[in-house]
Length: 325
Image (cartoon, rainbow, N blue to C red; front, side, top):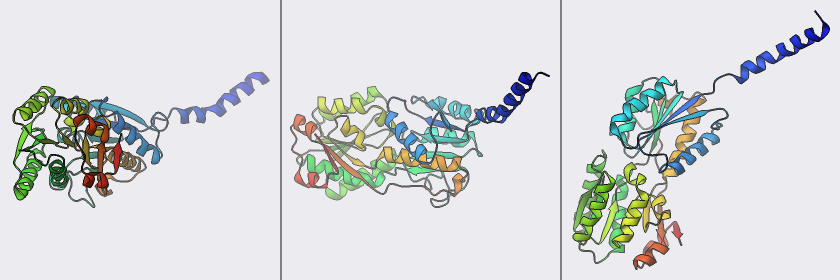
């Protein structure tokens, strides 16, 4: 063998382990959401931030595969099963109870990190908050206890209102609980109220026509993935009918809504990203305690208030965490 050929063979042999290492597959995170990528873009960014804080960067040492339900409930099971068949190392399920239950039904072995808007023990999702057990853990943005505060804000904004409306998504498993809390709180303070329902864009339009006809003084929007998906539409309807609306998330106010009170959904997704990273590193999902919000933020849009001709009470301004101008 010629010396040059021998050196070439030895040199290429030295690259074999390197090549083998480069071709090793990276873990796949299956991101399952019932809404649309456009509406949830900021929350995906927050999730990626948390994942990076845990040491994983999409496209480098982890690959995220997305499945978006576009609110087609019939597709939930198929989307979840696709990600399981794709050999995802972790499933991340959010955007409503339907998609979470689909992920749960698809596998009992693949770890699942969920984002829920309820008490995961009360709904039977996990055994306990501190030690969920099984293959599920996650973050809850449990919101029912915030309904009384939102009603209080609505009453301050519309002190002379004949009635205050609660806009709910009837397909949300928490709708009944939220509605009952709203009605019970209103009864305690003698506030006349009404409930309106919407699960589609057309029904949302109709709900605002209804509240205008019934001369509702203010509206409280339920914390719900569908309403997150139609943020801009809700803001436009509130402006069209000149009605003060209390939203559940900061993102509505940034989009032009009047006021919001609730936990940070972006922070919840960041925490879910961190948990996903921990699972990828070897932590068992069932050993990771469920996380709950520790802070609630009040955000006011002063520009919108001016456009609506509403003077924000000093009591609200003093409590506001953020004032958008």
